[in-house]
Length: 143
Image (cartoon, rainbow, N blue to C red):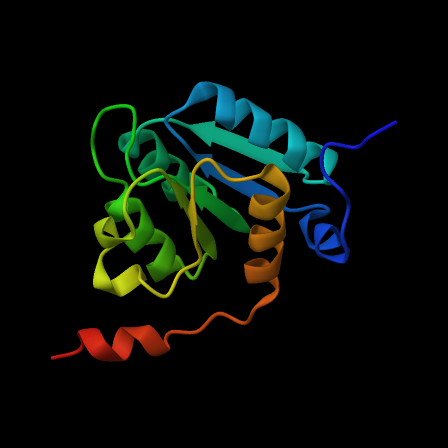
C-alpha cells in the first residue's frame, strides 16, 4: 500500500496543535484539513475570506497558520499576516501569487508556490512551529 504523504519527524510537532487554514480554494482547504488531522492536529479551522480570518483571530489563537495571499472575496490576506505577526503566530504563505505580492514585513516568511505537495506544506508548517518567535524583522519598520 502506498502512502500519499510520508510521515516525518516534523509531523510530531503537529500533534495536538490548533491550525488555521486561510485558503480560497475549497478542495485544497479540505485536503489540507484532512492531512492535518491525519498528522495529529487537535483542531483545524478553515476560512476563505479575510474578514472570517480576522474574526477567528479575535477569539481563537492557533499554533500555526497556512495562509493564501488572495482570498475568495478578491482581497489580499496581508492584513491577516500582519495580525499573525503581531500575535507571534507562526505562518507559512502558500499561494499561487508571485513572491513580490508579499509585503516587505513578511518577505522572510516561508513561501510555498501552489501547486505544492501537501507533505511539503505540512513539513514547512511543522518546522516553523518549532522555531522560536523572533521580532527582529520589526527593526526595519521602526522610525
